[in-house]
Amino acid sequence: MTFVKLAKFEKDQSTCSSHRTRAININNFANAVVKVSRSQTKLDAEIVKHLDTIHKYLETMTSVHNAFTDRSNALLHIQSLSSDLFALHNRVAKLESVSSRGIDQERTRYQKVEELKETIRTSEDAKSHARKEYELIKVNHLNL
Image: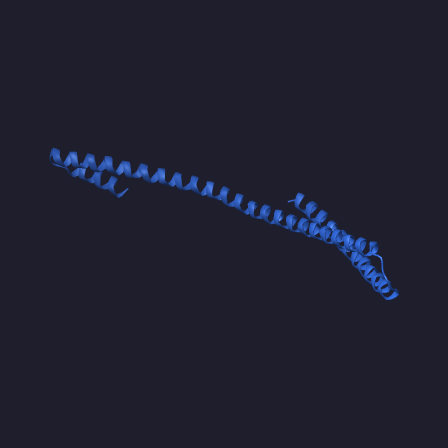
């Protein structure tokens, strides 16, 4: 705006054609600067608008990533408990299929089988609890 005022002043005070030409050039330059400034302001507003959209998207993506992480961890826990249960059932089957030679071996084998069966019950309870937790996580993340 200062250039516009300067150009007007020089145009009013000019005494020769070279001063008028210079005043016209200064005025053209000042108008171009004002147009660039206004364009820059509009551009800044557009950039802020788009950056706000990107910021909201990134916030959402963080939530989505955390939801998938929670869900996959819960599923992994269920799968590991299922694998452990499968191995325990195989050990029980193996112990039950083996024939014992003496009464002491029979008692020891019976105790091991009972301990394994108790471990299986505990593991099945843990798996049931993990499955309920997984379903709860799925329901909670559907509401996001």
